[in-house]
Image (tube, rainbow, N blue to C red):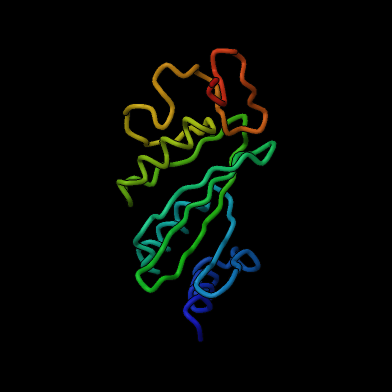
Length: 158
């Protein structure tokens, strides 16, 4: 049995609610979407038991009413597991994964700055990637964001 099929079966065996939610996209690529309440337990199992010991990225998505977050995990054998959760845009609170991957700090700061996520457990630190003088409450990767000030230009004048 291919490794990705084993991973899928282990996830479903451990978490029956994942039946029909774990997809093998292609060789060595697995994805699943879960509610954020089940995320901590599934994430912990993926990292500790399934040996997804590398965090490649956290991707933010504006889905209209919700913000989506995809955690891209990898194993040494080349398998990649993408775990997607969503949070309402009105209160986009998610938990930090820096206890597992200290390097998640930079990805979490990106989703805070660019999407307005509230990452619970993220240590205080400088903003990233936006400058400290970027207007509060302005999240440039949200679909409804508009430049409100002519001083912010998307292309330099020549």
